[in-house]
Length: 323
Image 1 (cartoon, rainbow, N blue to C red):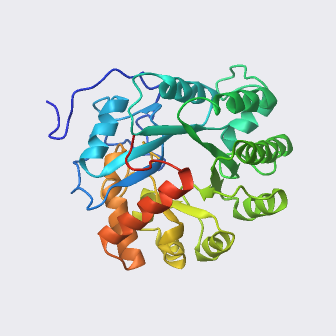
Image 2 (cartoon, one colour):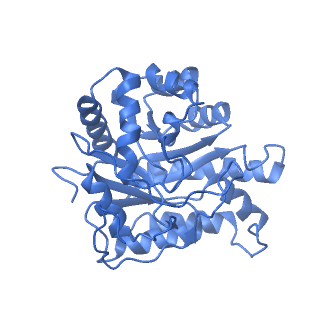
């Protein structure tokens, strides 16, 4: 039976991959969709999600995700494609007449994907084009309709060993190419940084960060948050800020002013407490917003208002409404 906040599905391309049944902690996941939270007093924008992924015991279309989000005050979303299959899917969705008016996107070669392109094969042994060819395709598709951000790019020493010389060089090369691309196209840059804070700072300082630089799913401590904020960059917080073991992340949030903060889901991953591990979607952002308001000592209304304004300013959209 449809959930209480279900809406009829409009035509949209099916997702290209499934999140899977096992969570990062190695346990079988509950794939039921969490209930919708109370709507936000002022709408906000989910500035980073992955609609190319399927999840949940009931598959939702792009339009289902958008409708559920709008019902709780998340009136716009940016979907990110971060490997070539997802990049092509995202570009096709944004160019389609079926694209919801409230949806925009961005594409890039994810740092871990950059390492695979340098190797020439994916984890299943399938042949991949070289890194230069992959970045060239990303560059071409970023010039298409609905593209408003370069990302996610950056460095990841969690899934790719920093000791692997070829993989490390590929990540640095890819990161620098995307920085240059964001400047060329005058687009914001979304950065993936996992266990690589120092190296991310060094590359951005050396190459010169784009004017609008966003640390997607910020994962650093208060010291790193201050270093980023002092450089004029923006910190985007996901459901991780609600996790019980995330006190350093909450301290980082408290270190910077709300004017440099945004909110995201990184859906279908990083579902906020109390539904950690279950499917995530933009309609669950009110749970993350409640924590952001609490940590920053502001009302929920003021936190939403400030974050929406910041997000609109960074991405240049939406102006006067989601369309």
